Image (cartoon, one colour):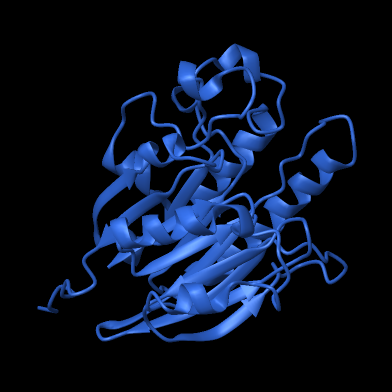
Length: 268
């Protein structure tokens, strides 16, 4: 099973690219972020025609997350638990029911947090605390779980072209990275780093200052896997070439393959 995540930075602007990429990569499940569209306006027909079921949690102009799946989606939940007053469309969860069983998937658009001196950074920190609590509760169920999305976190120096330039940015500050490490220390596996330890594996290049042309990128789009999902990981990749397409998002798709037919060890 192929599972992908992509911050499309407006599905209206990126619909043609999305359709081309869906045909090219042929993922079974896709988590989208920054759809920037209401639920009613989501281009369901265009996506459904490619064989996908859709779950959306949208918001006009800002944020917005979605899950596309070739399998039926059940138990769809909008919004990250822990703060009923938070009306940002940044989280959606669903259970994808496939012939081999079921896989729980969450599409995540974690707050950016900049500028650090504003109330946006404390909001990011509290959101990460809520995500930690969500993950800790989900992991107790011992499910196959994939938490995929734009985390707006650069985990380590190898994940940024110039660590010094990002030292005080909300994406790379020590408190941000510490909370991300705490999340993975719950037992979640960073799929890309499980597959490769090379530097320069970026998923985002800013539109400004020739970042793409100079390969001044950062890795902020992640798929975190529960132990049962990580046990089925066979391949992970970043579709860097998509950034060179016409009218690109500043993010590119990241994907994994899971061997969902893999058998559990037999008891002895």
